[in-house]
Image: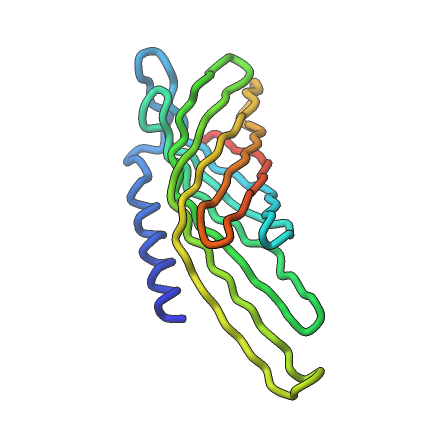
Amino acid sequence: MKKQNLIIASLSLFLIGLIPSTTNAQETNGQEIETNIGGMLAYGTEIENIGIGANAEFGIMKKLSISPSFIFYLPKETGPVKVNWFEVNANANYYFIQDEKFDVYGLGGLNYSSVKVKYDGSTLFGNDYSSSDGRFGLNLGGGAKLNLDSKITPFAELKYVIIDGGQLVLAAGVKFKI
């Protein structure tokens, strides 16, 4: 558990270090570089459950942004077995299409996934068992966002996490311009 907390703390410090020194929108070659924060709902194919997440997006160049995120999947119970799963991501988004109303991007980055499985032995053997594991992986995918004439930006993403077993994650939510 201490190792897991150390990894989470290290990733958090890394993600905080990625935040630009100013949170106001910057201008590069006439194109505004924005900072956004938001929330999302996700579905993971390996855990086969819905997750709730938070994300941010920090523009660093005209077509490139850094996008950290966190997804906590709802606990899944199958009989006496309970599974808890969360993931922390540090992605880079490259915008292929930037239109007045619609942006399309590819994403790639790092993933840390943590899974904890608990067995309630009171039903059969009388012993409780618990095990957890954390793994690093890679994210590959893409997404799109709808540019409305407001501070709210709906988005959708599809990514594949390259890790033991692999997981396809479909997410949708909103980002708020800061």
